[in-house]
Amino acid sequence: MLESILNSPMLWITITIGLYLIAGKLKAKWPKNPLFTPLVFAIIVIILFLLVTDIPLETYNTGGRFFSLFVTPATVALSIKLKKNFVYLKKYYAAILSGIVSGVIFHTIMIYAFALLFKFDQNMVATLIPKSITTAIAVGVSDSLGGIVSLTVAVVVFTGVIGAVVGQTVFKIFKIDDPVAQGVALGSSSHAMGTTKAIELGDVQGAMSGLSIVVTGIIVVILAPLTVPITNLLF
Amino acid sequence: MIASFIAIPGSVIGMVLLFLALQFNWVRVEQVDEVGTWLTDNMGIFFVPAGVGLMSNFGVLANTWWQLLIIMAVTTILMMGFVGKIVQSVKGMVKKNKLVEKGEGSHA
Image (cartoon, rainbow over all chains, first blue to last red; front, side):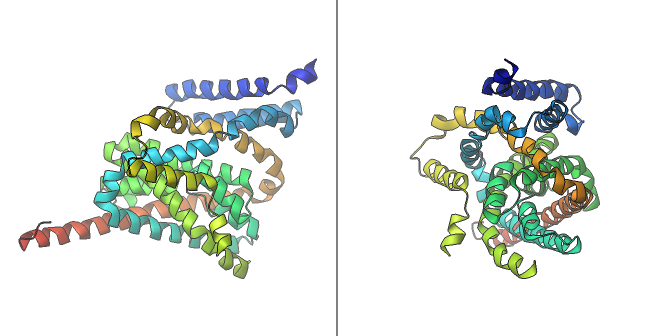
């Protein structure tokens, strides 16, 4: 009896959606607490639940895999956001593209430097290279480079939380007061979670940040294959 | 060379194709807006199973969590500052050039 309930996809689908909705309510009440970000909250509670009840990951995935199916269509749908904000890209393309391209290269160099410092292996480097882009694209990049996909998801989510929390302080320290620059900085370094912060800062910041998620994702996809020979050489 | 093309995730190819379709008016935004916005607004939930999959990597995390924490904090802060600075200064430069062009009477 219990066995058949546990193995039913509906149970896990219901739990996942339920936790996600509860987190949304908690988030509305305590907007400053990153723990109540629905994705973070659902992941933590489900992991704790599975650990406590000693239910294997495979059992959760009988229902969980249905959510993963939607990752690809949702990624494709990001292009609608790009289309809606395309006027901004046209207007400021020089600043946006030079900022993001050099930022992605700078980020990759930092990952290499830390990986060498901590003596990481190739898989770890592949896991971290797509760190700053949206989960949907990061998963694909990590997978094709030979990274640990689930660890990439965690790193991406955590990066987003950090970005959203430190954003305003970073802008103060680096004296970044231009709304376009703030939006691009948040979107390119901390994807959708940075964008929620950007939306708080203003309309221009929000639009620029949303646009930068997609642009940064595409630039990482284009540049990622180039890292393969470098990774092979260094590690 | 072919290997580097294969490395592009299918979802990204789809994204570029849909963008081109929207750009060239093969598909109108209104036709895909409702479903598309629903998908992107609720994107977080689609990654819950992938995140729960972290369970199978606790072994890796046990030894590296503090290193990952340092990497995430430092690289995110520096990248944000770096990108912001560059966008701000390039935008400033472009603006200045346009003003100069205007001054010379060309249509900027």
